[in-house]
Length: 437
Image (cartoon, one colour):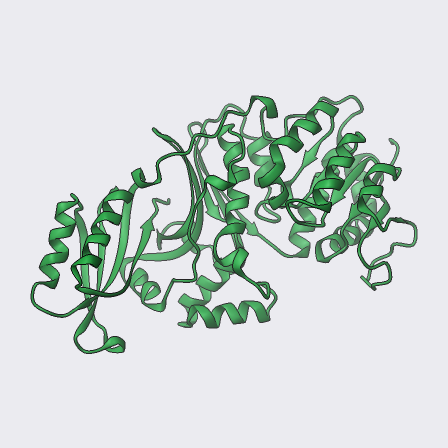
């Protein structure tokens, strides 16, 4: 049996405490699986005296996580502090510079600095593992980085934020408003006191940017992601989707197009019969489309202390299993210096079906004007549904349009024209319809 793998952990919140607990409770099993002990020898957190319900008496305490990364007698540095800059970035850079392997759950850090950190890790010949940064306990990073050799990926998409998926599920199942479901998610601990990062799509965008780099061999470009959140989704949209045979999910989608790589995060209608439509609550799912394998769907717990800790421990175990002198694979599937520049696709060229909800003043000429705008932009309609809109007055109707495949530019131009014509009140709702098996 080899020498023990010495682990230092910075950040002892919910996830950090869970990691320590798993490494302690499963010590014997991990030793059998890895062929060596895995021991936490050093830790760092803001409050030394907080009772976390874990045994830390044998671990050296560091008030400064950078000092832990630089000076502690460790083989692996685990960063669970969070944040894209500041102390999290400083201590990861210090650990890599010192020749320590790094495990992190920090998607924001990687979305902002992943390529530079990967270059440092590869130059030093150490691992930078980040399974827990995307989709919690689902092993999507390992699958894409190690298990899909020879496959050319054409599209990767998924439900990457449990908070949003929980809210949309409750809106559909219980007929509640977005605001009520958000408040419930906050009460249950699924949403933060300030939920903006989740509900406006930023969290999903960070995760998607990492999947994009892995899928297409490009440099990370989180700032080039088209992004919409779910805060404007109403019960009218949920009901209409159900009537038309769809469910609404917040998806992150990355795909190759003729004009470049398309990255987008937005509410999406998926067919009720599709597998991804069945993913409810805080569960995450990632679909990967390839030329050899076809479509692979991975689903499971996307957040929470245990799910994230499972991914972190898995990354640590991979390091423990590696033989001395083992040549580690690239962080993003190919050497960081060889990642291609990111070329952003023209979003308005995106083609697909669209759901359009309009609140229309019920008067002569209104529906003819709407039809004229659609025809002028070469938009073919699959269906038109009208409902009386008692909430907004007897003289108004809710009109639902479902288009055949068309372009983003055509839809936006048509909707802008309809709005200028003065026949609609309220802001039109436009939701993309995504092809999903």
